[in-house]
Length: 239
Image (cartoon, rainbow, N blue to C red):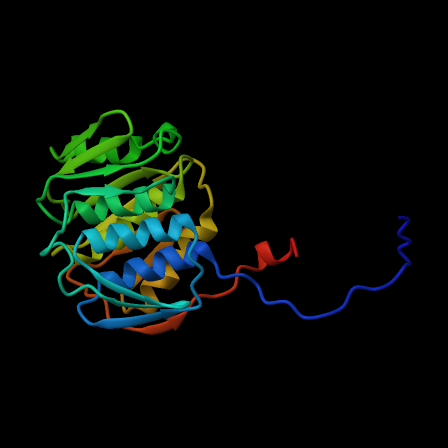
């Protein structure tokens, strides 16, 4: 068979796929609320399901109905189902969850694929060492124990912005204020902006005096919110 393709113009309408990066952030923010939130426009990749599973294991209630998730974090960290979280192959899940686990004094092990644990966790390892918190990597898992302390954090920006985002989820819930000083080259600065936006959508305010200094007020609380995940137009470009 010979197919002949004539010159023509492409036309039509497309819908950008949901942003996986924002979906992680909204699910975590909703699980840190004490009331019920609804996140719509979700697409359940393996990475997103890893975050959902970890939040459920830590005690959050998450009910999935189509592309919506109904989330309630009333029992988060107070009704932990298991002290083992499976992050699968999701770097975002692992790096976002570690500071949340350190809001509790529970000993919690986060596991994942061999490939996942080839990625650095040095930023958290150093923080835990400086604060005398438990942090032990064993093969394809890391075990943490202790309660994160408010204060001044110096974090390298050239490793991954996920460490900075992870701290920004947890530090507003501590009693006192904290500062994150970003050192070195800043990678993926747009993702830090996404985290700040997600936090603001759920009532948590983060301020930046400059590009490298993040000010985080303590004693904040997450406010429930019904919100849709925005489209990822960079991925839509492939269509």
